Image (cartoon, rainbow, N blue to C red):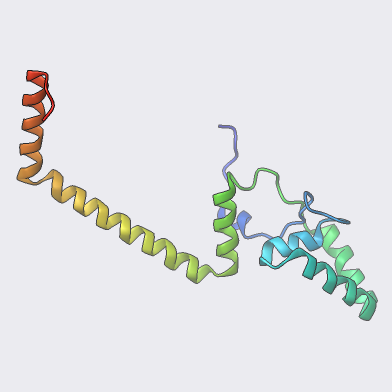
Amino acid sequence: MNKKFVYTFEYQTLYRDIENKKIAGVCAGLADYSSINVTLIRVLVVLGAFTFSFVVVAAYIAAIIFLKPKPVDLYTNEEDEEYWRKYRKSPRNTLAEARNKFRKLEQKIRKLETYVTSKKFNLDREFEEMDSQNGSKY
């Protein structure tokens, strides 16, 4: 595994999205970061360029200069990418989901622990040992 360790702040950074670019990837990067449709961002930028031409064009050029291109290997898989998009959009909800998943896992572990430390587990294990010695299955 040759993937470099990625710090969490790199997932939350605004990048230019070179893969989905039309000009320089600024609009695609904004769309990816904010989880807004890229077409909507592009339409707003074009309308802004006509309305506030100097300000929008200067901001776009500044974004081209100062925003780094999104690393190709930023996400390990699609699930990872989906998680970080949801996190950027709503960190509180994403953390609540994570807490809920950990609660469910803890409940499963408790049930497993209860079974493993019970008399039933020992009895089941003894029956399996007897069956394996006799060569039969219940």
